[in-house]
Each structure stands twice: as C-alpha cells, then as structure tokens.
Length: 105
Length: 43
Length: 471
Image 1: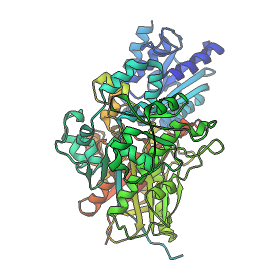
Image 2 (image 1 turned 180 degrees about the vertical axis):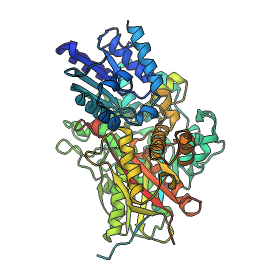
Image 3 (image 1 turned 180 degrees about the horizontal axis):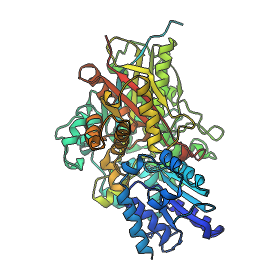
Image 4 (image 1 turned 90 degrees about the vertical axis):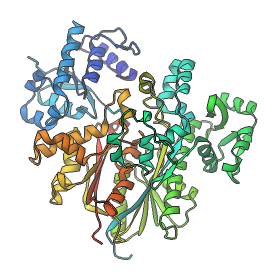
C-alpha cells in the first residue's frame, strides 16, 4: 500500500468514529492481502510509510471470506463478485487473512 | 458473525481483484456506509 | 462522399526506443530518488541494460515481429536470462533504436526550440542529427540552466548531454519535465508512423490520423488540449492528413481502432492511421521490484505504434464493427463484469462461442516486468477470467480452463507502456496469422483505469474483432 494511501487512511481514522469502521479488501493475491492487512492492523511492515509501526487496529476483512459473503445479500454478491471467487485463489487469500489476524493478536 | 449494517466501510479495491465499486455495492446492500474507496491499478 | 466500404486492418508497426538514462525521469524512479537519493541512483545505474541486451531480450524480439509470441511459452523465464543471440534491432513489425538516436530525434522533433545539447554530445550525434538545427551549449551553461529548473538529459555514467527547458516560466503544464515527456511521445509516435508509411503503400495518401496515447498536450489554460496526432504527422513528413486524438486511458488505441473503422465504413476516409507514442512516465515503474529480484531495469523502452486502417482490399483482416463493444455506463467494473461486456456479449451478438475465437489479445504486459513487483501476471489473469466465463456458459468444464487459457491466450510480452500494451502489440502477429497463417478470428480487448483521474470510480474498456478476409 503506497505512502499516500496510508496517509489518507490515517487521517480518516483519526477524524471520525473509528469504532464503527471496518475495512473490506479486494486484493487479488495472498501476498498483497497479507501486506495490506498487516499495514492496517499492525503498521506498515516495510516501515516506509506514515503507518510504520502505527497499529490502526481496524477490523479488516477480505470480500472472499465466508463471513463477508454471509453478510451480503446473495444476489448482490453473485453479481459483484461472482466467478472471481474461483478465479482468484480464495483459499490462499483467506489463509493470508487468518495469518494476518494471528500476527495482529 | 460480521454485521455490516451501519458500519463505516473503507473499500480498498484492486483493478485485478475486486475493484472498489463492486465492494461498495456489496457493503451498501448490507446496510453499510462507504466512507472511503479506492481502486489500485498497478500497470 | 463516396459510399463506405468495410474496414480492414492492413498493417501495424512499432517503434521501440531504448532509453536507459530516461529511466531516472520516470514517475516512480523520480519520486523514489527524491526520497532516497544517491544510493538508489547508483543501484539503478548499475542495473541499466546495454542496447544489445535490450535488442536480444526475447519479448522485444516479439514486439519487432522476429519471434512469435507463442515461442515464449517454451522460453525459460526470466526471459532476460535467455537472450536471442545475434538478434536484429528491426523486424517485420518495427524497429528498436538506441538512446543517442532517440536524443537526435528529440532534437529533430523539438518544434518550440526547448532542447539544448551539450557541445561535445552534439558533435558525437552529428551523423544522427543529419542537418537538424539544435542549440548547443558548453557544460557550464547547461549546469546553470539546470539550477534554474530545466530538465536534464543524461548519457551513460550520469554524463549531462543536454536539457529540456520549460515552455513557459510560470506554467506547471509546460515544465521541462512535461515537455520532455510529450516530446518523447511525439517522437516515438512519429518513428512508428514513418516506419509504417515507408513500408506499406507509401504512395497511398493518409486521410486522417487518430492519436490514442495517454499523454496530455497543452498549457495552463488547456492542460489536455491534445491532438498530438497532427504534431506526429507533421514530424513524420505527412501532408494532406487531418488528425485528432481519442483519449481513453489504456483503452485509447482499441477505442481509436473502432472509430477508425467507422470512419472508413462511412466513406468519409479511405486510409486512417491510429497512432500513439510511448510513455516516459512509466519508465522504471517497477524498478524497485527489479532491483530486489536482481533483474536488470527492464522498463527502459519507450514504444510508439501506428496501425493502418483502410477500405477493404480483399486480403487484410476485416475489422468487424458488428463485433465491437465498449464498456457502457452501468455495465459494472469488476473483472468478470468487464469480460462479460467486452468479450462474451459481442461474440454472442455474432452468434459465436468463445472457443470460436482463435486468440484473445488482452493487456499483454510482460510478466517478467510485473511479477517481481508483486503485480502478478496481467495477461494470465485476464485469460483466467475469460476461461471462467466460458465455463460459466457451459462451453468448457472448469477442469479445462487451463487448456483453454493456453490455446486461446498469449504470453505477455509488451513493455509496460500503458495504452501500448493493451491488445495492440499482437496486431502484427494477428495480421500475419489471419492472412498467411491459419487464424480465422482474433478479439482485441483493452481496459482503461478511468478511476485514476479521480473524476469517477469507474473503469472502462473496448473490444473489437478481426476476422480473416473472404477475398
């Protein structure tokens, strides 16, 4: 996640009712999912950005996770996500989310 | 159980994954409010 | 106005300019160097490619038409470790020039007299400059101009070989850096156009030029005024052609092909050339990934293109306008929604199955460039989605998806030059395959990231079908 992006999110989180905030990711790979999830929960793993070492502590989910799918009306999910569920490596992405949560805990 | 109703959603999309408008449509259909959205493109 | 005729795509040519020292002027390197300075500059410099390595790079040979794209399937990756020994810097699809030649062309294309070369460098370039008037200055004067904001031109070893002055002292849209970026696009576009017209029916007049690149030509009052097409045509020595630009991010060229086809079909014009110059801003975009992987800096090539769209000649592949599609408002932006609108829908209108198309030409970015930077294999991702839609439509089983992708897809081979990479690098090969070779149908599919301009969150795309001529 680039530095400008991190800055914009940091300002947003500092400004509003962060307790109601949740992040939904659409990253395409396990690697990019891990990077972004860690940046948002623990702080920038590359220590390059404004979020370096700054845990935002936001709950982060990926749209391919079962719990996200369950929260969204089925027809909308089918239309907006549809075959991307099996085009993308969903199990690797879900696994990466799990590992990112473990590291944040 | 994840509940998106009345949540403030940050939709971080990617062009080659799921882009922000699709995430937004999902979040809004579940009663969430999208306060930030961006789609990354890396080429 | 004579009645229209079906349009055909007769030829396509690419001009590649090796520009290792312009990598430092690319957007990502420029920003990284501002933060990280000398150390990064030295590392980048140590990983720049020589001209010979750029020529022998297998994907470059595919761009020049000396190698079929499908030959890359069997070529061990990373491809820079499998150079094509003895390869030529030109081929049936175009030409690859060295950086000094590019510098000479920048001087040749410098209509506003903003380029200055170092005295000694101008002497070295004499043969290439061939009568071009260019301002020259001794080094001390150049160094001074740099402190006043001019954009430097470097040669090997950080040697200062010239500079580009700003077009106006108080205009952000005409800084030396912007002028250089636009000149680079103009010149590479003109090289491609010249190559096309020198080789393909030079006696036949060009009626119209359609620019399709992503540069912004203008000034403080009209930053994106455009019509680089006419400037390119002028530099290429044309007379009698009109011009305008089609602006649509990376989907520009395919949108422009559709427009060109419609212009010919209407009878308004008989010969339209779709052209574009290269993107200086995208040089070195993935350089950090390449350094980390121990690769050379692969994004050192500016690429221009020119595509000949003419009235049906009975031989060239037909541009099936009835198989054209664009991503419309409301079609959606997720990859599968885009593929549905651009790939599936037009084929269904023609009464075809997906497997009736021999090759899909998608965004053909070289995966050796994108993967080390974590950006994945872009063509492969596109083919996966097309295969998934074929499976969804019941044409193939999910288990057959990989075989479908291999049979109907292509390995990526294009430099990451944005609009240039979007389907069109396959055109010379498609035309050969659809005339002398066995191909019957090719679909060109391009996507544009409109959301990057912050005026919309939408994407865009365009597609069109080429079919073997009946003649």
